[in-house]
Image (cartoon, rainbow, N blue to C red):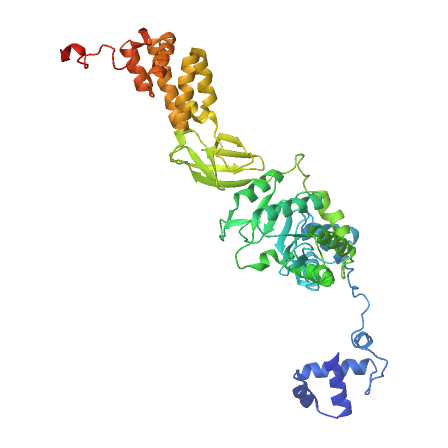
Amino acid sequence: MRKIREVLRLSHGSLLSRRAVAASLGISRDAVADYLVRASSAGLTWPLPDSLDDAQLEKRLYPVEPGTRARRPEPNWTDVHRDMQLPGATLQQLHAEYLVAHPNGMQRSQFSALYRKWCRSLKSYMRQTHLAGEKVFVDYAGPTVPIHDPVSGCVHRAQIFVSVLGASNYTYAEAHWSQTLPDWIAANVRMLEFFGGVPKFIVCDNLKSAVTRASLTEPLVNDSYQNFAAHYGTTIQPARSRHPKDKAKVEGHVLIVERWILFRLRRRVFTSLGELNCAIRELLDELNSRPFQKLAGNRRSAFENLDAPLLRSLPVTSYEYVEFRRARVDMSKMVNVAGRLFSAPARLVSQVVDIRVTATLVELVFDGRRVASHVKTPGDDPVIDPAHLTPAEHAYGLWTPERELQWANGIGPQTTAFVEQRLAANGGKTAGYRLGIGMRKLSAEFGVDRVEAACTKAIHSGATSVSSLRAILVNRLDMHGLDITEANFPHENLRGPKHYH
Protein backbone atom coordinates (compact mmCIF):
# COMPACT_ATOMS: atom_id res chain seq x y z
CA MET A 1 0.00 0.00 0.00
CA ARG A 2 2.93 2.33 0.54
CA LYS A 3 3.87 2.32 -3.16
CA ILE A 4 0.26 2.89 -4.19
CA ARG A 5 0.16 5.97 -2.01
CA GLU A 6 3.44 7.14 -3.58
CA VAL A 7 2.02 6.60 -7.09
CA LEU A 8 -1.00 8.76 -6.26
CA ARG A 9 1.20 11.44 -4.65
CA LEU A 10 3.67 11.68 -7.51
CA SER A 11 0.99 11.52 -10.22
CA HIS A 12 -1.55 13.93 -8.70
CA GLY A 13 0.55 15.93 -6.30
CA SER A 14 3.78 16.34 -8.28
CA LEU A 15 2.18 15.91 -11.73
CA LEU A 16 4.86 13.52 -12.94
CA SER A 17 4.35 11.34 -15.98
CA ARG A 18 3.74 7.63 -15.65
CA ARG A 19 7.23 6.94 -17.01
CA ALA A 20 8.80 9.23 -14.40
CA VAL A 21 6.71 7.73 -11.60
CA ALA A 22 7.69 4.20 -12.66
CA ALA A 23 11.38 5.13 -12.80
CA SER A 24 11.23 6.84 -9.42
CA LEU A 25 9.57 3.91 -7.62
CA GLY A 26 11.28 1.11 -9.54
CA ILE A 27 8.06 -0.43 -10.84
CA SER A 28 6.67 -0.90 -14.35
CA ARG A 29 4.55 1.67 -16.18
CA ASP A 30 1.77 -0.92 -16.43
CA ALA A 31 1.67 -1.18 -12.66
CA VAL A 32 1.49 2.62 -12.37
CA ALA A 33 -1.35 2.68 -14.91
CA ASP A 34 -3.21 -0.11 -13.03
CA TYR A 35 -2.96 1.75 -9.72
CA LEU A 36 -4.24 4.98 -11.24
CA VAL A 37 -7.16 3.29 -12.99
CA ARG A 38 -8.19 1.48 -9.81
CA ALA A 39 -7.98 4.71 -7.80
CA SER A 40 -10.09 6.52 -10.38
CA SER A 41 -12.67 3.70 -10.37
CA ALA A 42 -12.83 3.83 -6.60
CA GLY A 43 -13.30 7.62 -6.65
CA LEU A 44 -10.05 8.29 -4.80
CA THR A 45 -8.20 11.59 -5.28
CA TRP A 46 -5.06 13.05 -3.81
CA PRO A 47 -4.59 13.76 -0.97
CA LEU A 48 -6.21 10.66 0.52
CA PRO A 49 -8.33 11.08 3.62
CA ASP A 50 -6.40 10.71 6.91
CA SER A 51 -8.92 8.18 8.18
CA LEU A 52 -8.22 5.81 5.27
CA ASP A 53 -5.84 3.11 6.52
CA ASP A 54 -4.11 0.48 4.42
CA ALA A 55 -6.77 -2.18 4.99
CA GLN A 56 -9.57 0.16 3.85
CA LEU A 57 -7.49 1.35 0.89
CA GLU A 58 -6.96 -2.26 -0.19
CA LYS A 59 -10.69 -2.95 -0.03
CA ARG A 60 -11.42 0.15 -2.12
CA LEU A 61 -8.83 -0.69 -4.77
CA TYR A 62 -9.43 -4.47 -4.80
CA PRO A 63 -13.10 -5.03 -3.98
CA VAL A 64 -14.41 -8.60 -3.76
CA GLU A 65 -16.45 -9.22 -6.87
CA PRO A 66 -19.74 -11.09 -6.69
CA GLY A 67 -19.20 -14.81 -7.02
CA THR A 68 -15.60 -14.62 -5.75
CA ARG A 69 -14.93 -17.10 -2.96
CA ALA A 70 -14.29 -15.67 0.48
CA ARG A 71 -11.03 -16.39 2.35
CA ARG A 72 -11.01 -19.97 3.62
CA PRO A 73 -11.09 -20.39 7.39
CA GLU A 74 -7.83 -21.22 9.16
CA PRO A 75 -7.58 -23.75 11.99
CA ASN A 76 -6.25 -22.94 15.43
CA TRP A 77 -2.55 -23.37 14.70
CA THR A 78 -1.79 -23.78 18.40
CA ASP A 79 -3.96 -26.92 18.50
CA VAL A 80 -2.32 -28.17 15.31
CA HIS A 81 1.15 -27.61 16.78
CA ARG A 82 0.20 -29.46 19.98
CA ASP A 83 -1.24 -32.41 18.01
CA MET A 84 1.91 -32.61 15.88
CA GLN A 85 3.86 -33.46 19.03
CA LEU A 86 1.87 -36.67 19.54
CA PRO A 87 3.28 -39.97 18.22
CA GLY A 88 2.10 -40.81 14.70
CA ALA A 89 0.81 -37.32 13.92
CA THR A 90 1.16 -36.04 10.34
CA LEU A 91 0.03 -32.87 8.60
CA GLN A 92 -1.89 -34.99 6.13
CA GLN A 93 -4.00 -36.56 8.88
CA LEU A 94 -4.56 -33.21 10.63
CA HIS A 95 -5.59 -31.66 7.30
CA ALA A 96 -8.13 -34.46 6.84
CA GLU A 97 -9.59 -33.68 10.28
CA TYR A 98 -9.65 -30.00 9.34
CA LEU A 99 -11.67 -30.77 6.20
CA VAL A 100 -14.25 -32.64 8.29
CA ALA A 101 -14.94 -29.43 10.21
CA HIS A 102 -14.55 -27.18 7.12
CA PRO A 103 -15.52 -29.09 3.95
CA ASN A 104 -14.74 -26.06 1.75
CA GLY A 105 -11.44 -25.35 3.53
CA MET A 106 -7.99 -24.88 2.11
CA GLN A 107 -6.08 -27.58 0.29
CA ARG A 108 -3.31 -29.57 1.94
CA SER A 109 -0.46 -27.65 0.29
CA GLN A 110 -1.75 -24.34 1.59
CA PHE A 111 -2.54 -25.91 4.98
CA SER A 112 1.06 -27.14 5.31
CA ALA A 113 2.57 -23.87 4.08
CA LEU A 114 0.56 -21.77 6.53
CA TYR A 115 1.44 -24.11 9.42
CA ARG A 116 5.15 -23.84 8.68
CA LYS A 117 4.83 -20.07 8.42
CA TRP A 118 3.14 -20.03 11.84
CA CYS A 119 5.93 -22.19 13.30
CA ARG A 120 8.52 -19.66 12.15
CA SER A 121 6.82 -17.06 14.33
CA LEU A 122 7.66 -19.07 17.46
CA LYS A 123 10.89 -18.78 19.38
CA SER A 124 13.86 -20.65 18.00
CA TYR A 125 14.01 -23.23 20.78
CA MET A 126 10.46 -24.34 19.95
CA ARG A 127 11.01 -24.89 16.25
CA GLN A 128 11.96 -28.53 16.61
CA THR A 129 9.13 -30.98 16.94
CA HIS A 130 9.65 -33.44 19.78
CA LEU A 131 7.21 -36.30 20.31
CA ALA A 132 5.55 -36.53 23.70
CA GLY A 133 7.26 -38.92 26.09
CA GLU A 134 10.17 -39.44 23.72
CA LYS A 135 13.17 -37.39 24.89
CA VAL A 136 14.56 -35.66 27.93
CA PHE A 137 17.61 -33.41 27.49
CA VAL A 138 20.17 -33.11 30.32
CA ASP A 139 23.12 -30.78 30.89
CA TYR A 140 24.93 -28.66 33.48
CA ALA A 141 24.60 -24.91 33.89
CA GLY A 142 27.78 -22.90 33.54
CA PRO A 143 27.56 -20.86 36.78
CA THR A 144 28.02 -22.55 40.14
CA VAL A 145 26.50 -21.55 43.47
CA PRO A 146 28.69 -20.92 46.57
CA ILE A 147 27.86 -22.81 49.76
CA HIS A 148 29.51 -21.53 52.94
CA ASP A 149 30.59 -24.01 55.61
CA PRO A 150 29.71 -22.35 58.94
CA VAL A 151 32.21 -24.51 60.87
CA SER A 152 35.37 -24.23 58.77
CA GLY A 153 34.49 -21.06 56.88
CA CYS A 154 35.36 -22.70 53.55
CA VAL A 155 33.33 -21.95 50.44
CA HIS A 156 32.33 -24.87 48.22
CA ARG A 157 30.89 -24.54 44.71
CA ALA A 158 27.76 -26.53 43.87
CA GLN A 159 27.10 -27.71 40.30
CA ILE A 160 23.62 -27.10 38.82
CA PHE A 161 22.06 -30.00 36.90
CA VAL A 162 19.30 -29.06 34.40
CA SER A 163 16.94 -31.27 32.38
CA VAL A 164 13.88 -30.60 30.19
CA LEU A 165 11.33 -32.79 28.46
CA GLY A 166 11.19 -32.24 24.70
CA ALA A 167 7.45 -31.91 24.08
CA SER A 168 6.20 -30.03 27.14
CA ASN A 169 9.36 -28.10 28.18
CA TYR A 170 8.76 -29.35 31.73
CA THR A 171 11.98 -28.47 33.57
CA TYR A 172 13.92 -30.02 36.44
CA ALA A 173 16.98 -28.59 38.21
CA GLU A 174 19.01 -29.48 41.28
CA ALA A 175 22.37 -28.77 42.91
CA HIS A 176 25.04 -31.31 43.83
CA TRP A 177 28.74 -31.21 44.63
CA SER A 178 30.45 -32.40 41.47
CA GLN A 179 30.04 -33.76 37.95
CA THR A 180 31.58 -37.10 38.89
CA LEU A 181 29.87 -40.38 38.05
CA PRO A 182 28.07 -40.98 41.40
CA ASP A 183 26.61 -37.44 41.50
CA TRP A 184 25.71 -37.58 37.79
CA ILE A 185 23.77 -40.86 38.04
CA ALA A 186 22.12 -39.84 41.31
CA ALA A 187 20.87 -36.64 39.61
CA ASN A 188 19.45 -38.69 36.73
CA VAL A 189 17.65 -40.97 39.19
CA ARG A 190 16.08 -38.02 41.04
CA MET A 191 15.12 -36.44 37.70
CA LEU A 192 13.10 -39.50 36.66
CA GLU A 193 11.48 -39.65 40.08
CA PHE A 194 10.52 -35.96 39.68
CA PHE A 195 8.91 -36.68 36.30
CA GLY A 196 7.22 -39.79 37.67
CA GLY A 197 8.13 -41.78 34.55
CA VAL A 198 10.80 -42.68 32.03
CA PRO A 199 11.16 -41.26 28.48
CA LYS A 200 12.45 -43.35 25.57
CA PHE A 201 15.70 -41.42 25.20
CA ILE A 202 18.02 -39.39 27.44
CA VAL A 203 20.01 -36.91 25.34
CA CYS A 204 23.21 -35.87 27.11
CA ASP A 205 26.45 -34.03 26.47
CA ASN A 206 29.80 -35.80 26.09
CA LEU A 207 31.00 -35.36 29.68
CA LYS A 208 33.21 -38.18 30.98
CA SER A 209 30.61 -39.36 33.49
CA ALA A 210 28.24 -40.15 30.62
CA VAL A 211 30.37 -40.93 27.56
CA THR A 212 33.66 -42.82 27.68
CA ARG A 213 34.49 -42.19 24.02
CA ALA A 214 32.77 -39.59 21.85
CA SER A 215 32.05 -40.61 18.26
CA LEU A 216 29.86 -39.41 15.42
CA THR A 217 28.49 -42.88 14.67
CA GLU A 218 29.28 -45.13 17.65
CA PRO A 219 29.75 -43.22 20.92
CA LEU A 220 30.78 -45.39 23.87
CA VAL A 221 28.52 -44.80 26.87
CA ASN A 222 29.98 -45.23 30.37
CA ASP A 223 29.25 -48.74 31.68
CA SER A 224 27.69 -47.47 34.91
CA TYR A 225 25.48 -45.02 33.02
CA GLN A 226 24.49 -47.81 30.63
CA ASN A 227 23.58 -50.00 33.61
CA PHE A 228 21.40 -47.16 34.90
CA ALA A 229 19.65 -46.95 31.50
CA ALA A 230 19.08 -50.72 31.44
CA HIS A 231 17.49 -50.62 34.89
CA TYR A 232 15.01 -47.93 33.82
CA GLY A 233 14.45 -49.31 30.30
CA THR A 234 15.60 -46.19 28.47
CA THR A 235 18.30 -45.40 25.90
CA ILE A 236 21.25 -43.00 26.27
CA GLN A 237 21.64 -40.84 23.17
CA PRO A 238 24.79 -38.67 23.36
CA ALA A 239 24.80 -35.47 21.31
CA ARG A 240 27.44 -35.11 18.64
CA SER A 241 30.65 -33.52 19.78
CA ARG A 242 30.71 -29.75 19.11
CA HIS A 243 27.07 -29.80 17.92
CA PRO A 244 25.10 -27.95 20.63
CA LYS A 245 22.03 -27.81 18.39
CA ASP A 246 21.57 -31.54 19.01
CA LYS A 247 20.51 -30.54 22.51
CA ALA A 248 19.29 -27.02 21.78
CA LYS A 249 16.26 -27.60 24.00
CA VAL A 250 18.31 -27.91 27.19
CA GLU A 251 20.81 -25.26 26.06
CA GLY A 252 17.95 -22.77 26.01
CA HIS A 253 16.56 -23.96 29.32
CA VAL A 254 19.95 -23.69 30.98
CA LEU A 255 19.72 -19.97 30.24
CA ILE A 256 16.16 -19.90 31.58
CA VAL A 257 17.28 -21.57 34.83
CA GLU A 258 20.18 -19.15 35.13
CA ARG A 259 17.89 -16.14 34.65
CA TRP A 260 14.78 -17.19 36.56
CA ILE A 261 16.38 -19.22 39.37
CA LEU A 262 20.11 -18.68 39.86
CA PHE A 263 20.03 -14.92 39.28
CA ARG A 264 17.28 -14.53 41.86
CA LEU A 265 19.32 -16.50 44.40
CA ARG A 266 22.55 -14.55 43.88
CA ARG A 267 22.25 -12.51 47.10
CA ARG A 268 21.26 -15.39 49.37
CA VAL A 269 23.87 -17.12 51.51
CA PHE A 270 23.52 -20.90 51.70
CA THR A 271 25.16 -23.04 54.35
CA SER A 272 24.16 -26.51 53.09
CA LEU A 273 23.31 -28.30 49.87
CA GLY A 274 19.85 -29.18 51.14
CA GLU A 275 19.07 -25.53 51.84
CA LEU A 276 20.09 -24.59 48.29
CA ASN A 277 17.98 -27.37 46.75
CA CYS A 278 14.92 -26.29 48.72
CA ALA A 279 15.29 -22.76 47.32
CA ILE A 280 15.78 -24.11 43.79
CA ARG A 281 12.67 -26.31 44.08
CA GLU A 282 10.49 -23.36 45.10
CA LEU A 283 11.58 -21.27 42.11
CA LEU A 284 11.40 -24.34 39.85
CA ASP A 285 7.73 -24.84 40.71
CA GLU A 286 7.15 -21.19 39.90
CA LEU A 287 8.98 -21.54 36.58
CA ASN A 288 6.93 -24.58 35.53
CA SER A 289 3.73 -22.71 36.40
CA ARG A 290 4.64 -19.57 34.44
CA PRO A 291 2.28 -19.13 31.41
CA PHE A 292 3.65 -19.49 27.89
CA GLN A 293 3.85 -16.28 25.88
CA LYS A 294 2.44 -17.57 22.59
CA LEU A 295 0.85 -20.88 23.57
CA ALA A 296 -1.98 -21.65 25.93
CA GLY A 297 -1.15 -23.06 29.36
CA ASN A 298 2.24 -23.53 31.01
CA ARG A 299 4.96 -26.15 31.33
CA ARG A 300 3.11 -28.05 34.03
CA SER A 301 -0.18 -28.28 32.14
CA ALA A 302 1.68 -29.20 28.94
CA PHE A 303 3.49 -31.95 30.85
CA GLU A 304 0.25 -33.33 32.25
CA ASN A 305 -1.41 -33.33 28.83
CA LEU A 306 1.51 -34.38 26.61
CA ASP A 307 4.44 -36.12 28.28
CA ALA A 308 3.02 -37.61 31.48
CA PRO A 309 0.52 -40.01 29.80
CA LEU A 310 3.22 -41.42 27.49
CA LEU A 311 6.14 -41.82 29.91
CA ARG A 312 7.02 -45.37 30.86
CA SER A 313 6.40 -46.41 34.46
CA LEU A 314 9.24 -46.35 36.94
CA PRO A 315 10.61 -49.80 37.87
CA VAL A 316 9.32 -51.40 41.05
CA THR A 317 12.78 -51.83 42.57
CA SER A 318 14.90 -48.80 43.31
CA TYR A 319 18.18 -48.33 41.44
CA GLU A 320 21.41 -49.47 43.11
CA TYR A 321 24.49 -47.54 42.11
CA VAL A 322 27.04 -49.74 40.32
CA GLU A 323 30.56 -49.04 39.07
CA PHE A 324 32.25 -51.19 36.44
CA ARG A 325 36.00 -51.70 36.20
CA ARG A 326 38.50 -54.05 34.57
CA ALA A 327 41.61 -55.58 36.12
CA ARG A 328 44.06 -58.42 35.52
CA VAL A 329 44.30 -61.26 38.04
CA ASP A 330 47.88 -61.33 39.35
CA MET A 331 50.00 -64.38 40.16
CA SER A 332 48.72 -64.37 43.75
CA LYS A 333 45.16 -64.81 42.40
CA MET A 334 44.13 -61.33 43.54
CA VAL A 335 42.68 -58.25 41.83
CA ASN A 336 43.12 -54.70 43.05
CA VAL A 337 39.89 -52.74 43.51
CA ALA A 338 40.41 -49.17 44.75
CA GLY A 339 43.54 -50.16 46.66
CA ARG A 340 42.10 -53.30 48.26
CA LEU A 341 42.78 -56.89 47.19
CA PHE A 342 40.03 -59.41 46.40
CA SER A 343 40.60 -63.06 45.52
CA ALA A 344 39.76 -64.75 42.22
CA PRO A 345 39.71 -68.40 41.08
CA ALA A 346 43.15 -69.84 40.34
CA ARG A 347 42.23 -70.65 36.71
CA LEU A 348 41.91 -66.90 35.98
CA VAL A 349 45.53 -66.01 36.80
CA SER A 350 46.82 -63.48 34.20
CA GLN A 351 43.28 -63.09 32.77
CA VAL A 352 41.43 -59.75 32.57
CA VAL A 353 38.12 -59.79 34.44
CA ASP A 354 35.24 -57.31 34.64
CA ILE A 355 34.54 -55.99 38.12
CA ARG A 356 31.09 -54.91 39.29
CA VAL A 357 31.22 -52.77 42.44
CA THR A 358 28.14 -51.87 44.48
CA ALA A 359 27.77 -50.41 47.94
CA THR A 360 27.91 -53.89 49.52
CA LEU A 361 29.41 -56.29 46.96
CA VAL A 362 32.41 -56.74 44.68
CA GLU A 363 31.64 -59.19 41.87
CA LEU A 364 34.08 -60.60 39.31
CA VAL A 365 32.73 -61.44 35.85
CA PHE A 366 34.57 -63.42 33.17
CA ASP A 367 33.12 -64.26 29.74
CA GLY A 368 29.77 -62.89 30.86
CA ARG A 369 29.54 -65.15 33.93
CA ARG A 370 29.98 -64.24 37.57
CA VAL A 371 32.98 -66.15 38.91
CA ALA A 372 33.36 -64.54 42.35
CA SER A 373 31.33 -62.46 44.77
CA HIS A 374 32.79 -60.74 47.84
CA VAL A 375 30.99 -58.86 50.60
CA LYS A 376 32.61 -55.49 51.26
CA THR A 377 33.78 -55.24 54.85
CA PRO A 378 35.42 -52.39 56.79
CA GLY A 379 39.19 -52.08 56.63
CA ASP A 380 41.85 -52.59 53.99
CA ASP A 381 42.79 -56.24 54.61
CA PRO A 382 42.64 -58.58 51.59
CA VAL A 383 39.29 -60.30 51.11
CA ILE A 384 39.79 -63.99 50.31
CA ASP A 385 37.15 -66.55 49.44
CA PRO A 386 38.25 -69.95 50.89
CA ALA A 387 36.92 -71.63 47.72
CA HIS A 388 39.69 -69.90 45.75
CA LEU A 389 42.48 -71.54 47.82
CA THR A 390 44.30 -74.81 47.25
CA PRO A 391 44.16 -77.27 50.19
CA ALA A 392 47.62 -76.20 51.30
CA GLU A 393 46.79 -72.48 51.01
CA HIS A 394 43.51 -73.10 52.80
CA ALA A 395 45.29 -74.82 55.68
CA TYR A 396 47.94 -72.11 55.88
CA GLY A 397 45.36 -69.36 55.75
CA LEU A 398 43.34 -70.89 58.58
CA TRP A 399 46.39 -71.74 60.74
CA THR A 400 46.57 -70.25 64.23
CA PRO A 401 48.81 -71.07 67.25
CA GLU A 402 45.70 -72.06 69.17
CA ARG A 403 44.84 -74.68 66.56
CA GLU A 404 48.38 -76.15 66.84
CA LEU A 405 48.25 -76.27 70.63
CA GLN A 406 44.83 -77.91 70.51
CA TRP A 407 46.26 -80.65 68.31
CA ALA A 408 49.29 -81.09 70.58
CA ASN A 409 47.04 -81.32 73.64
CA GLY A 410 45.35 -84.28 72.02
CA ILE A 411 48.74 -86.08 71.88
CA GLY A 412 49.90 -85.45 75.44
CA PRO A 413 51.24 -82.88 77.90
CA GLN A 414 54.88 -83.32 76.83
CA THR A 415 53.99 -82.74 73.20
CA THR A 416 52.04 -79.65 74.23
CA ALA A 417 55.05 -78.39 76.21
CA PHE A 418 57.40 -79.01 73.25
CA VAL A 419 55.06 -77.21 70.80
CA GLU A 420 54.58 -74.28 73.19
CA GLN A 421 58.34 -73.97 73.54
CA ARG A 422 58.93 -73.97 69.78
CA LEU A 423 56.08 -71.53 69.06
CA ALA A 424 57.44 -69.10 71.63
CA ALA A 425 60.93 -69.36 70.20
CA ASN A 426 60.02 -69.07 66.48
CA GLY A 427 57.15 -66.61 66.85
CA GLY A 428 56.11 -66.49 63.20
CA LYS A 429 53.14 -67.90 61.32
CA THR A 430 55.29 -69.54 58.67
CA ALA A 431 57.58 -71.22 61.22
CA GLY A 432 54.60 -72.28 63.31
CA TYR A 433 52.82 -73.70 60.26
CA ARG A 434 55.92 -75.71 59.29
CA LEU A 435 56.26 -76.94 62.90
CA GLY A 436 52.70 -78.25 62.73
CA ILE A 437 53.35 -80.03 59.44
CA GLY A 438 56.50 -81.67 60.83
CA MET A 439 54.82 -82.79 64.06
CA ARG A 440 51.91 -84.32 62.18
CA LYS A 441 54.23 -86.22 59.87
CA LEU A 442 56.05 -87.69 62.90
CA SER A 443 52.75 -88.61 64.48
CA ALA A 444 51.60 -90.38 61.32
CA GLU A 445 54.94 -92.17 60.85
CA PHE A 446 55.77 -93.27 64.42
CA GLY A 447 52.47 -93.02 66.30
CA VAL A 448 51.24 -90.63 68.94
CA ASP A 449 52.63 -92.61 71.88
CA ARG A 450 56.18 -92.56 70.61
CA VAL A 451 55.89 -88.84 69.71
CA GLU A 452 54.81 -88.13 73.28
CA ALA A 453 57.78 -90.12 74.61
CA ALA A 454 60.14 -88.45 72.16
CA CYS A 455 58.99 -85.02 73.28
CA THR A 456 59.71 -86.07 76.88
CA LYS A 457 63.23 -87.14 75.89
CA ALA A 458 63.78 -83.95 73.85
CA ILE A 459 62.70 -81.64 76.66
CA HIS A 460 64.93 -83.52 79.15
CA SER A 461 67.96 -83.45 76.86
CA GLY A 462 67.47 -79.90 75.60
CA ALA A 463 66.67 -80.78 71.97
CA THR A 464 65.04 -77.82 70.27
CA SER A 465 64.08 -78.85 66.75
CA VAL A 466 61.81 -81.22 64.89
CA SER A 467 64.90 -82.81 63.28
CA SER A 468 66.24 -83.69 66.75
CA LEU A 469 62.85 -85.17 67.59
CA ARG A 470 63.02 -87.31 64.43
CA ALA A 471 66.55 -88.46 65.34
CA ILE A 472 65.28 -89.63 68.73
CA LEU A 473 62.48 -91.57 67.07
CA VAL A 474 64.65 -93.06 64.32
CA ASN A 475 67.25 -94.26 66.83
CA ARG A 476 64.51 -95.48 69.18
CA LEU A 477 65.94 -93.39 71.97
CA ASP A 478 62.45 -92.64 73.16
CA MET A 479 62.33 -96.22 74.44
CA HIS A 480 65.27 -95.76 76.90
CA GLY A 481 65.04 -94.24 80.29
CA LEU A 482 65.61 -90.59 81.01
CA ASP A 483 69.01 -91.37 82.71
CA ILE A 484 70.62 -91.94 79.32
CA THR A 485 71.95 -88.68 77.95
CA GLU A 486 73.54 -87.68 74.73
CA ALA A 487 77.03 -88.30 76.30
CA ASN A 488 76.62 -91.98 77.46
CA PHE A 489 74.10 -93.67 75.20
CA PRO A 490 75.57 -96.16 72.64
CA HIS A 491 76.14 -94.75 69.19
CA GLU A 492 78.30 -95.85 66.29
CA ASN A 493 80.05 -92.48 66.16
CA LEU A 494 81.07 -92.62 69.83
CA ARG A 495 84.30 -94.51 70.75
CA GLY A 496 83.36 -95.19 74.37
CA PRO A 497 85.53 -95.60 77.55
CA LYS A 498 87.28 -98.80 76.30
CA HIS A 499 89.04 -96.76 73.64
CA TYR A 500 91.14 -95.07 76.34
CA HIS A 501 92.39 -98.27 78.14
